Length: 574
Image (cartoon, rainbow, N blue to C red; front, side, top):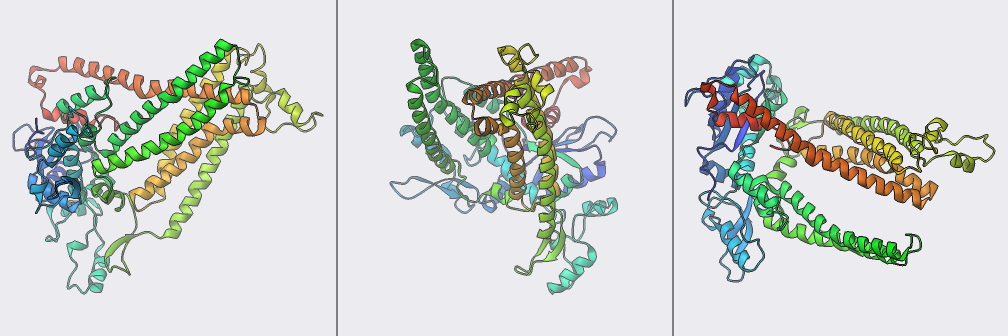
C-alpha cells in the first residue's frame, strides 16, 4: 500500500502563535504558495478554499497543513543531494547508493523496493518489511518531510525577482528585521558594482523570521496513523528485532540509529548477564564470597573481551546501516547542521575571500562568552559538590573513622566530614547503614537530587549555548553536549571516584555501584516508560470526555483537529 497522495495530504504542520495576526498568516500562505509549498488544510478552514481564522483571543491556534508537488520534491531532492538506491548497468552490482538527480529518475523509481526484494533472497534484509513509499517508489514518509522542511528553511522572505511584497511591507510596518539595512545594502551594492540594491542580498529565510520573532512555535511532520501503528506493533514484538528500515523510512535516520543501538546493546548485554548469573549461583552453591571466588578473575577477563567485541561489532553494524540509510555522505541534514542557525546573530559584511554577503560575529566575543559560561558551570559544580559531600556523609561513606584516619589527634578536621550528617548513618539513625531499607533512602534522595540538578542545568546550558551565539547547529550542539557531559559526569560519578581513589574500599564501591545502577534503572523505567504511558492514557480519557460534551455541530472532528492535537504533543511524540 503506497503512501497517501502527496498533493492532497499534509506532510508538515505549521502552528502559529497567538501573536500572529490574520494579515500575517494570509501573507505567509501566499509566500509559501509562491515557493511551491501548498497549504492543503487549516485548523479553522470553515469554507473549503478559504481561510477563516479565529481571533487572537481564542484558545485554538491556527495550524496549517503543508505539502508540495512531486516535481518540486524531486527538484529539492537533487539540490539537497539526497542519497537513494539506484540501479546500475553492471551484472554483479545491481544497485548502489547514489545522489538523486531528476535527469536519471528512471534509475531510482522503485529501486528501493527491488533492492529490498533482492536482499530478502540473500537474507540480508528482513522479510515482511513494512516500509511504505510513494506511488512512484521514490520517497518515503521521512524523506518527504525532510525535503519539504528543506524547502521551507531555504524559502526567503522575498523572491530574488521582487523588491517588495505584501509580506515584506507588513514586516516593515511591524518593525521586524528580515534583511540588510538600507544604507548597508547600498554600500554593499556599490562594492558589488550594482546600480541599485537587490533583494538577492536578503539572506534571512521566512522560516527563520517566523521562529525568531515568535510568530510560529511548532513545525513538525504529520503522522500517518496506519503506518505508525504497524511500526509500533513490530517494534514492541519480543520475538523479532525492531524494523529498522521501516523506522528509518517513517521517522528518519536518527531515530532508526537509536533503536539499532538499543537493540544491539540489549542483545549483547545478555552475554555478561547470563554469565554473571551463572557465576553468582555457582559462588553461592560453593559458599564463597566475591573476594575468594576462583571464577571472579575469569569473569573479569571475559567482560574485558566482551566490551571490546561489543564496540567493534557495533562499528560494523553502524557502517552497514550508514550505507543502507544513505547517511555516509553530505546530505540535506548536514546542509542544515553545517549551515547558519536561524538564531545566529551578527552584522552583515562582505566576505573578503568569497566576495559574498555574510552574517559575521567576531570570534573573540564568542571566546569571552565561552569563558563566562565555563565560570558559571564551575560555580554550579561547586554547589553540586556540596550536595555530593553531604550525600557521602549520610550514606556512611565518610564517618568518624575517616576523621581519625585523617588526624588521629583530632586537631585537624577532615575537610569533608560533617558530624551531624554523618551521625544520621550511625546505628539506630534514620539512615542506618546496617539496615538495607534505611540505607537505600539516602541513595534514592541522591538520585532525585542528581536528576533535579541535571534537569535544571540542562536548561541553563541551553541558555548559555544560545548566548554564546554559535554560527552552525553543529557548534551549538557540541557546546551544549560538552557542558552537560562535564556537569552530569561530575555529579553522577564523583562519589565513585572518591571511594575508589581515596577510600580504596572495594566493598563500599561495589555497594554504591549496585545501588546507583538499580536506582537509576528504576528511575528511567518510571520516567521514560511508565509516566509517559500514564500521561497519554490520562490525556486520551480527558480528550474523550471533552468530546462527549461538545455540541452536535462540533462532534464531527476533521483533519484540522488532528493537526491541532499533533501540534500540541510533546516534542518526543511529534
